[in-house]
Length: 456
Image (tube, rainbow, N blue to C red):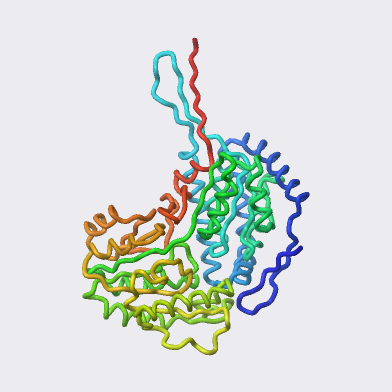
């Protein structure tokens, strides 16, 4: 059996890779176990040196890797290059945080007692990253897992398997088997999760996928980290600076064709600014250029999934049937390929509509006017998701007040669609469990060992 990866722009086969069978999975798992036993004996300075050297090898291939990302999932080449840039920035930040995150904690002395808390590696960590940011969803786990003394098995998305292969070849160069790449179907993945030799599982993807992962792991007492869906709201307050806000919100909704876990997926606008907001958002969207993702002039490429345009069109149709107004585009451009979906602006969308409640994962921006901050807060929290939320205001007291009431893992003022690697990345409600990034991201990749010595 082969996994065939199809270019969403031109329909050509990018690569065909054989699936791992039970023999190859077992061989890779044994190699990971052997490598981890040796790797955990490296002190942190040695691990950092090895990982830094491996990152340099990855950097030497960065242009080819960027081209592979674009070919596999369709984002513009400029965005693929930017993802690689952020990949290195995030890796470096995690390296810098590791000494503090992994340092043993020696407690205050008690007479005749010595107490210490150690951070022990989990062992073999299974990472299942997503295709939308195939490097960033992987680096969040792979680099801190290695820093903590684990080995890693990567089962990347079936849309972007070459990214898993590149990561294994470079970041696993320190020891044979330290990072392995797997091509698996769903059944094989579930079976591997249930293997007692896997110490930790981390998954980035859909809520449905997260449920499957959690169910597969439910027979074992292991940690499972889940970064799942989002329906991230933004609130444009009465004092918002539209010159500053508009371009950032439109980009937050349309960058990477809206295929971001923390993309802006619904906007609530103070009624005093609503008409101007719609006019300027429409004008901004009109200038987004769709086309060949390999061309420097392209702002948005095709959707990665062939089913995505139809799914998004259904959300638009349902919203219009409920009274929403289509502001842009009034007609779908006729010259687009079947995998394209144009930036789309909806007005007066009732909050019960699917466009306001279900993850769109595309360049769709549904909006609704609100009377005040209190109404905005209630509508923003009216969701099964809680990944991020943004407040666009010049009043920090307003932002602080709303941040206390918002049910989301990250709250922004005058920013959106961004991860700071020094802050924990986590979700409320069905947006996931556990944290990645920051000092707290290391906690799920380690277990605490208590040391209590009495000289006697």
